[in-house]
Image 1 (cartoon, rainbow, N blue to C red):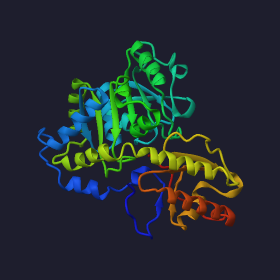
Image 2: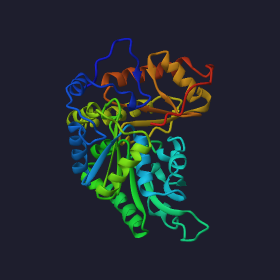
Image 3: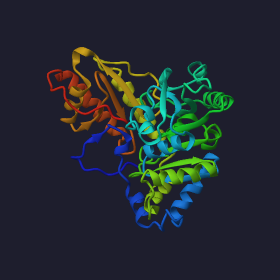
Length: 366
C-alpha cells in the first residue's frame, strides 16, 4: 500500500499530512464526475457527503478545504460573538488555528487541563459560567479524537458519552475535532456511528492518515449543515468542481482505513526501538495510534539539533520545541523504513549533535 519513492527521497515523519496520493487515488481523481458544488450539482461531492453523514449517523455533511476550516465552521455554527467554548489546553482549535475562533467568530476559548489531551467530568464540572451579563456565555465543548499533543490517544466510548451527557445537561453544544478520527475508530474498536451519536458536529480530515492531497468534512444535523454552508461561503471555502477532491476521499475510505492499523503497528515498533537508546526518555510503553512523542535528555542536545542531524541522514522529524520530538507514521513509511529510522537515530546519538545550530522550525501543528 505504500507509495513508491525514489531512493533519494527522505523518510518523512514530520506529519501524516505529508502523504502523497497513490496512483490509484490519482486515477480516481482524474476520472471523477464533476459539477458545480456551490450549486449542489457535483455528483461525486454529493455522494461523499451522503456517505459520511450516513457513516456517522448524522443527517447531512459538507465538504471543506481543510480541518481548520471545518473546525471553524463548527465553532461558528454553534456560537455567536461573545460566546465561549471549552477545550483541552492542548487542543488544535486553540493552539494551531491562528486564533480563528476569535478572528472569524468573536468566540472566546477557555482551556482546561486533563491527562493525555483529554477532557472528562473532573475537568469540566463547575466550568459553565453563570447566566449573568458580566460573563461570556459558555456555549460549546470541543473534544479531539485522536489527541494530537496528547500523544495520539483515543477516547473510549464511555468517556465520550460522559462528556456528551454532561454537555447536554448544561445545554451546551458538542463538537469533535476528528482530524484523525479514523485512526481512533481503528484503534478504539468502535464504529463511526457510535462516535457520531455523542456530537452535534464532527470535523473529519482526509489529508492525514487517509492519504488525500487535501479536504475535510463537517457532519451534523440538516439545519446545522445548511448553516455551515453559508459559513463556508463567508470563509471563502466554497469550491466548484470539487468532485476531484471528493473522489480522492472516496478512494481513501475504500482503500486506506483498515490499513491504518499498519501505521499503528509501525509506531509501536518505532517506540519500542527508541526506548532502548540512551539519551531518549519518556517514550510511552503503549502507542495507541500513529504518533510517537519523546524527550531528549538535556545533555544530548535539543530537538531542533536532533532534527538537523537526522535530516542529514535523509530522515525528517518534528521538533516540538525544547527537548520534545514527534515522529508520525503513515502510509508512506514502511516497516523497513522504521528500522532505517532507528539505525539513523542510534548513529546520531553515537556521534553526537549537541554542537549543531539551535535554530529551526517547530512545533508542528498537525
